[in-house]
Length: 431
Image (cartoon, rainbow, N blue to C red; front, top):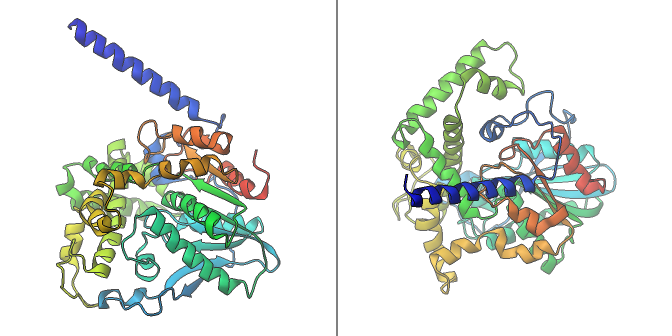
């Protein structure tokens, strides 16, 4: 080993030591009881039975439909997406109202939104649950352009539907205050919606909580895209890897007498999945979810990204070939080859890198830093954050940031302590 090599290793070691020190300094919650300390396992499995918050089995969580753009004509393939679907759970008396925004590709009534709805309804809130702007139904029915990912436009679209929903609900319920939360991309969206509300003042949100948001949207989707590289055999083995997982889960399902909320945890333990395989599973899940959004946007705008421009697909079209293409198209491909070119004319002064960099919480850091009503919950080991990004929340939010030592990406959202803190943030009892 040369002196140069030795010096280089010393410098690298010192940097890693410093990074470890910074990482440990971010944690604000000590003696944490969430059981899964592996960040990939936590992300996939969630909260095992016995550790979940006690929530009511039933709440009056009902679907509603909203026509946002009455004059919009949809391509025949998307005939079913004219109306935006959302869910509400309403109290029978005057109560605070909270809007919930789902994460990437998730519906208004997905698992995490439903659990949050149960928690807040139990705490006495009117609940309005919205899909992510990246959910296909939102793209077809509520996106002003059909091309999502621009933080400002997505916030404006969300705010528009929130105003329309409240205009309908105002006739039936009494809301004593308005509040807002969202998880993952929904947390990111919530920050921009809150800022927009400072200008429009329709709601004057009392409290806003961001749960596991990305710092840079592009960095986070790049991390998730790269997880498909962990597929054994590479991306060419996408279908084979997915089939093996399905077969493994099916065998465990067949052998289990009781298939409850603990099934994923049991499957994870029984299949002995390694971190690389768990990362691949997360990447595959994200690829499928984002592919659905990308294809919907492409058909909506006839952009020609996956579907040939000018080709009209009817509701009976065979989409197999597009599914095959989309399994190899990452979200970063969408950003570079569809999203940026589509919006370039609106931001002529910005380079591609400047445009992408602007879509993050850094762009509104001053607002977040000086807005005491906005708080954040996050995990030190979140898989969607680049090294060092967790420090953004401590630096910007200060004591309004609650950072847990582990939990992966939203894996601990239904853990009893997390749910208690989430609700207490809005009831004024948070420590």
